[in-house]
Length: 250
Image (cartoon, rainbow, N blue to C red; front, top):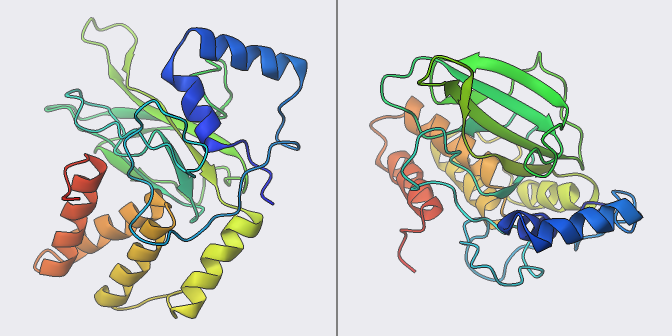
């Protein structure tokens, strides 16, 4: 079993700054929850339909691997194009957020742990980005499988002092049994290292089915940028973003 803190638990903690967070703080203080003790079910392939784009409705999400709660479409820049709680397979994920018109510099910050619950969470990586996306570089500190990370984007404050910070979101890096299940699925489909656009789209669909949204987005984004005249690549990227916004047809 994977020794990860349940994603649904983290999502529930972030729904309210009140009693839920107070209870969470008490539980952590008492030592009843730890990375070593926390358990979550192995990553299952859903019987039908994609995972990772569910809109969190405040209900118990214990049966889901991702309590997504999309942050897009809120009407403000700096909002991550990502689930509130996500999964990462590739050690160099792509981070993408809503741009602000006229902004030429964004400050991207990656934290060890949930910065929403712990404002003093250690900074793992920080950099300036000229556009509203970046890929975690090889030169940065390697992401640790099984760990929880969070990230957010800031822009210079309109007052000229400090930074205006966007909303933070979390993600786990797959490890152990979860990662093995996904690798097996890719291997069975002969999609470990796809070369063609069609095969890369098939690979993205597998990531999507397993709720590994970050990897699906990176593939979709790369294919759309590299193949502007490929209708299938453009359509998949658009549908992926629409799904994140909760606008896809049911």
